Image 1 (spheres, rainbow, N blue to C red):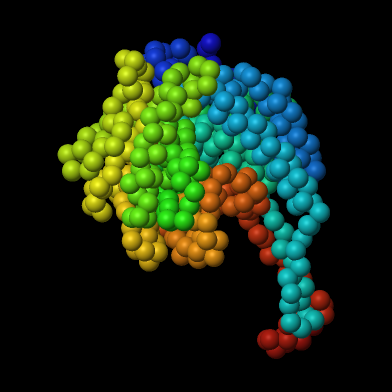
Image 2 (cartoon, rainbow, N blue to C red):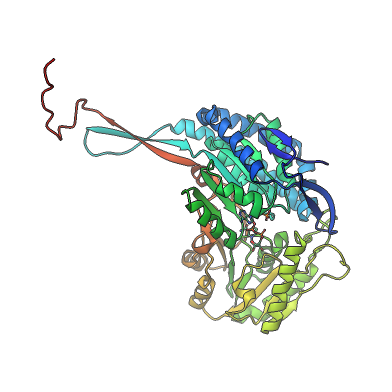
Length: 496
Ligand code: NDP
């Protein structure tokens, strides 16, 4: 299919004439292509967005925007099978997980419909002032035209986590999806246009990060950049955005710990640990890829964990019952394999995995991999690998577990498993992370704030926090007594 850039609610060819191939990660074969957008395409998209914003979208009521958001949700449900199949083909993830993503995004558009209506109901917020002379209120205004740069691990979700609240807030958007997984963003843009979103409110420019992505970040017509991806690219974007003080939200990487105490029931705890490390092939910003296991249960726990990892059904995302598909790309496969090699060379003990699973001689498959005897300075312990690689350390007491868990520049998510609720609560509070899970792992609560501390980013997505990130508070102060302030002596006016 000859897909185009989505600008002003029309699919158009990219100006460069160049295209990027879409590769099926299960086979390594190309099956489609998207335009390689350039700076001129970005400029056209930003102009379309600005025109839509100024010509009326910014003045729409929350109720009007809610109506469109609900139609989008219905459109997603009506296109459920097609969206899920496309996501699995392009990204590689198991089809059942693509269905979860599609159902979740339909709920997110619905949730933001309610939050958009809430803006109308809330109106202007009164500020509590001492004295009677002034009255101040706060009106919440859309930030403007937002550039959004999304990664390849959850293409539909990442697009929606940004686009749905932006629409709810009255902003316009130009989205640059990852070059590895652009197809579902284009298909979702079509569904959104069919749902009645006015032309120009949403635009999608496919292309590479350094070309289309960077042109978006540099564009003077952009008021805010909302980015999800690696910490290195996030820093680069923030530096460029500082040139003209664009607002930025950054959802970056993590090297998230899961702490398992000695009072857990082994089998369910093993399942939560495996889920946190291997779901979506470990390509999750909140993947709990550092296991801290209490010394007294470590041998039993790791034996069961290895059995569970080896029983995970691997295959093409379309195959029945598969729980782990291929990684997204050759580049990601090479990156993950190089970390595995580094772990081996550094002297960690490979409990399982570490290679292509047997029977898979093409595609980007990596078997679930577990390393024990990992040391603090090994890259498999310090770096975000973004693949199915779990590194394990043992601990002796609570204080040591917390210290080791927090000993990372990242602070996105952290998990604690313990039957002692008071301890789970205490440890969760002591963990430096934007998101914590107790006795579960990697649950996405769309109503709650999502984002990190330390080098995992700034700002929050989802829930009302996601909406607020696209709004600017505007102070409106009135002088009630009438007349002047009486600060200066005002001489009598000259006659005449
Ligand atoms: P990147 O940070 O490079 O990519 C994320 C997005 O940024 C993509 O759309 C990418 O475009 C774009 N981008 C890349 N360079 C620029 C630039 N100079 N200016 C503007 N936009 C740019 O991540 P990768 O895809 O390369 O993945 C590398 C690592 O990042 C992973 O191994 C993982 O550790 C981490 N990561 C973290 C994610 C998270 O959710 N926190 C998500 C994805 C990756 P394009 O893909 O077209 O180059």
